[in-house]
Length: 67
Image 1: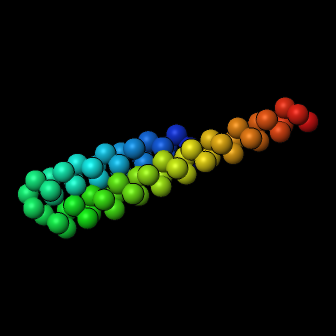
Image 2 (image 1 turned 90 degrees about the horizontal axis):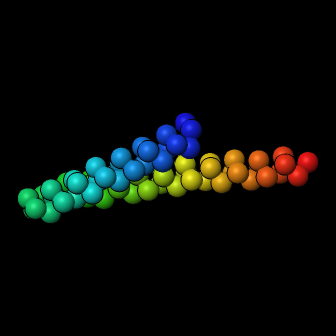
Image 3 (image 1 turned 120 degrees about the vertical axis):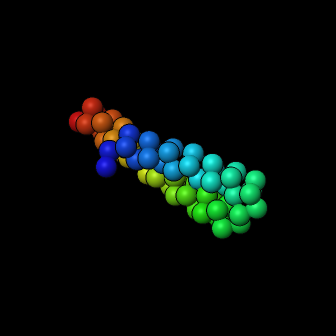
């Protein structure tokens, strides 16, 4: 996956996870709250992977320019 795809999927998972948590809290559904938190954390990890890929690509470009 590209870094952009990772970041977009991560943001989407974070948003859906937050929504699930909110609905779970409003309805008293603890299982939905936990599922939402897990999805939010998955999204944060996906987004971090995308940002790391961007950082690696930037570092590689900087090295190429110096050579």
